[in-house]
Image (tube, rainbow, N blue to C red):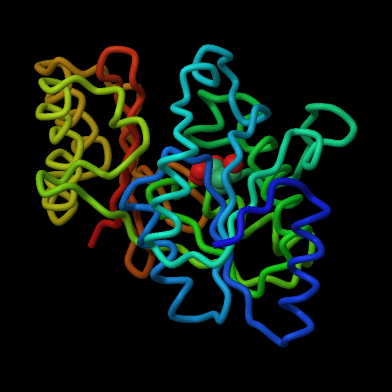
Length: 280
Ligand code: PAF
């Protein structure tokens, strides 16, 4: 596996792959890799000749400096995992390769997608994500790019950014991988103690209940029940919402022919966990 440590080596590498007519699949990450990331590479391998990943902890998408500083940095382990996963090359840029003019986000019009959910709690977060992903896509020039459905709003926002900027890449969502308990795999799980990790299954189990209640209750009734579950737990619910899957706007009624998704964000101590599930 090639480790490309700056923009120049990346650009040379991509040029060679393109000259050889290779179809490139790309899955960007912020490191602290786990099995959930491997599922991105597996999806990429099926549809491309060359699989490239990147490891870059993007400062502009953290609205909390403490969260940025505490973000796990495990590059040596990440490189081993990438190699074992059969990734062909990994781009590990420095901040200057992505932000030559300083750590500043661009401002995007995501047609309101960024005003919902995470957008309300993490001001500027999606501009940071849009900026880094746009720059990475411009440099890596993949035919296909892969993102986890665990960050469903991020996936929707990246699709919107790609559409608006006319970047010639197809964006794919990859289903969330879960531990046997149902807990969604996440780099942040590393920060949970044993007790929290066991109890964190409450998030998945509550989403399953919401899916069940979706058949007979209104969004408001489901929300009340979910809030009560969390009040009786050791987890602090930041928000629960059911949205139209397309617009990501909270729904007050369920209508025939529309798709809906439930989202939970909860804190275990100071660890913020997120998850979501399609309702049917
Ligand atoms: O999901 C992530 O790991 C990050 O938000 C991404 C897409 C790599 C951008 O920094």
